[in-house]
Amino acid sequence: MGEFLEFDNVSRHYGDIRAVDGVSLAVRKGEFFSLLGPSGCGKTTLLRMLAGFETPDAGRVFLDGKDITAQPANERKVNTIFQSYALFPHLSVWDNIAFGPRIAKRPRKEIAEDVEKMLKLIQLSDQAWKKPDQLSGGQKQRVAIARALINKPQVLLLDEPLAALDLKLRQRMLIELDLIHDQVGITFLYVTHDQGEAMSLSDRIAVMDHGKIEQIGTPAEIYEAPRSSFVAAFIGDTNFFEGEVDEIIEGEYSRLEIEGFPPVVCFNDKQLVDGVPVFISIRPEKFRIWREKPDLDWKHTVVKGTVEDVIYLGHSTKYWVRVQDYRIAVHRQHHRFLLDEKPIRWHDDVWLSWHADDGFMLERYREADEQLMETPPEKVGEAQGRT
Image (tube, rainbow, N blue to C red):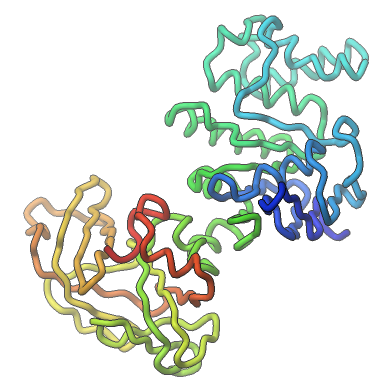
């Protein structure tokens, strides 16, 4: 096996439910890798099969070149962090961290040295003799991490570890998790439904849906070049437009027909041919909004619309612009903002433009893709689709 951690065509079914359905996935040594997707997509089941809490119905799991599919959980060099912390309430922070090495009957001096290292790593040396109920949620989570790391696992599994924390604590713990990973250098496999967590922490992400992997890539690849309508909708805000490939231009670009729009030019990275029905995904920040019609080259599409809503956010302004049957979300960054500049307001007529390289064509090949146009925005990103 060429990779450090590998799932080879793994499946796990519960009756008619295919929790994990033929997943193949490779994770590199020392990587911070996230499994991202909605509830019920199979990400936690995949994690549990690696931990040894579940057995695959088919396929194999490899760790550091060794087939561990049938290996008992207590013999695997992995440790799991749960959102519930699972600390022993009657033990101090020091004793909670020391619990694993004591069970393993490691020498006392070695245990003491390693516990002190862990306390220093999580910056809780001054809290060593407190009980868990005397700690904040973030401190408890750090103790749980230290208790797992002291066992020197090859992989640390994190199952929604920040879900129980409030927003500010989550944001702080994201930074701390990243720092801890950099310092210890082991492989982290992180499960979350929160795209912000995955995007900010991960070296790579696997986006999952209905037991399958939709796409694997870096955060930038997942966001900027989604391979399916689901990925485009689940990661960040996007606008979807329904169209059809009309003709190929200069090999790399296509002219598309979208009802009520002028001809739309889009980069055709998927080499879709004439007549194929597609979605076009365009992120809100890719649009430019104008008071007057701009004079741009053939790689830009320009459409006229009417502002339906405006939200000033300080660093940017968010607009919703009606163009035919579409309610388009537009983000305008305030690189320079002049107080004496006439602002764009509700009901103003405006022009929107975007570059052909900023739209992504997504072939409509599944029933789920057809349903995206009718899905409530809060389910797939508040900026997508028709209204």
